[in-house]
Image (cartoon, rainbow, N blue to C red; front, side):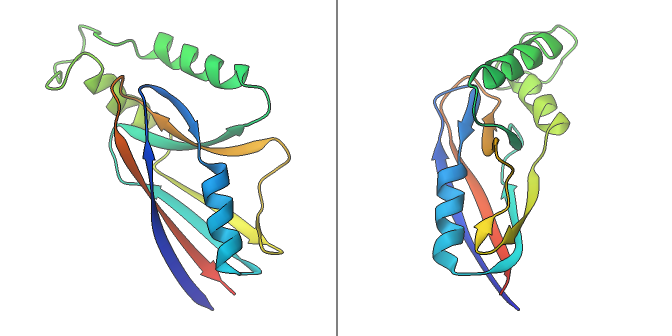
Amino acid sequence: MQQINTRISVTTRGRRLYDITPQVMQWVTNAGFKTGMLNLYIQHTSASLLINENYDPDVLVDMEAFFARLIPDGDPLFIHTAEGDDDMPAHIRAALTQTSISIPVLEGKVALGTWQGIFLYEHRTASHTRYVLLHLQGE
């Protein structure tokens, strides 16, 4: 059994879901593993990772609409506003989603379902550079 890892960077342009599936799949393909487990981990408290539908872009629009209604920016409930009205809502969004995802690798490929994609979900309204660690264990 072997282990390898890398770090990818994603430049975001504000709050939305960014499809990182192609970057992840290319790295796994280049690794040459036939079977194993891939773990992705985001090193931020105001962004997260999701597996969601990658066929109909309306799904991503609806996801953001839901979160905007659930956790509005500028809610007077929040006292942590050091970096603006979107600061605490970004932390709550990250807490309700995921910072880590594990996906099997089968026959040399990331074993996503037909309509699944891997997304970095930027929860802040400003642009950021986000880092995702990829760790692959297998053979």
